[in-house]
Every structure is written in C-alpha cells, then in structure tokens.
Length: 230
Image 1: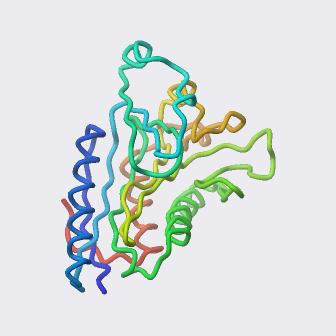
Image 2 (image 1 turned 135 degrees about the vertical axis):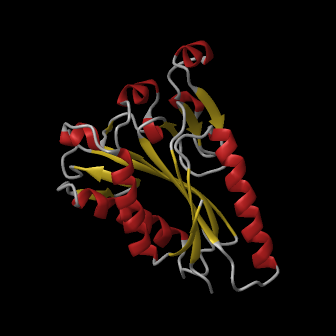
C-alpha cells in the first residue's frame, strides 16, 4: 500500500473552509478504500487559522468561558466539530496540521497514530533544546510533566478516524497569542497551563522555519513519500 502523500500549505485559511476541504479529501480516500484501490494518495495540510474556538464531539460547552457577544468582540468564531477531545483554540502563529491518511498503509492503529503525531512534535522541540514529553491520561505534548505546578501543554491533538482513515490533527503553539486560551478551559482542563515556543524561548520564531522542521519530523516518523506540494 502507498505512503505517497501530497503536502498542502496555506498561510491562513478560514476554519470552516479548511474543514470542508479536509472532508472532501477524507471522503475520497474512504471511497477508494471501498473500491479496494491500493495506490491511495494521502494528504498533509499545514495552515494557520483566524481566531477560532472548536469543540470536539465529546466536549462540554461549559468549557467556553465567554458568551457570543464577547466572542465577537475578540474577533473569534466558534464551531462544534466531529473530532475527539474537548475545546481548543486556533489562531495566527499556531501551526495546525491535518494529516488525512489511509492508516492501513502505515500499519497504524489509532493509539499508535496519535503517538506518532506526538513524537514528531517532541523531536521538533528537542531541536530547540526543550525536553517535551507525553502526560499520562492526556493526549498532546507537554513540558515539565513531573511537576504539577509547572506542567503545561504546547501542542494539542484531536483526531477523527473512520475505517482507518484520519482527519483533523494537531495544533502546535509557535508564536501564538496565549491570551485567547484564557477564555476557555483548554481541552477541558482547569488546572494545567498552555505555552508556546515563543514563550519558552523568549523570542519570536520564524514560523516557516519551525513548520519546515515539523514537516521533516513528520516525514521521518511516518516515512511519508511526498510526491507533490500544493
């Protein structure tokens, strides 16, 4: 089976527009799997979104701490979506990655797939001399996991899979405005902080350079065979 992958890059794209685009690619792979095609093309989308809060299907609206009028004042939108997980924020300066993959071709179950996403971000942070880890009982990538007073999330992960095809993905805070997280209980947590690469290093990063490192680490972890860039 094929690990051929098309890489799609958007500087900034409306959340709903990108969600619809994901659904189109996702449904195309599902159709091809039903037809027993063996040379199915995978997709990896990198983008940034305008300010938006998204709530996963298992999440609670109580974790949104502002009302509709306040949301508009923050120039943000809100969407209930079909991924796992609770509420999170996307916005400028945050690298959002959406792998739409035929997981069968990668011989990955859902837990292993999430592990691989985490691993790519952990490897990226290592290149910036940050020791990132997994936190037991919580998906994503974290810093200072052994200190309850300091533990903080730098990358959120929320996915949807059907018939071993994936969509949605990860949100990695690079130069993200962290104030927007103050209006939610991120991922449903009330006792854990959120951070960014900029905050940890105390310097604004070249976003595209960091994104390229993430892309290379994803390629390393998943063994992608990139065939086209769009």
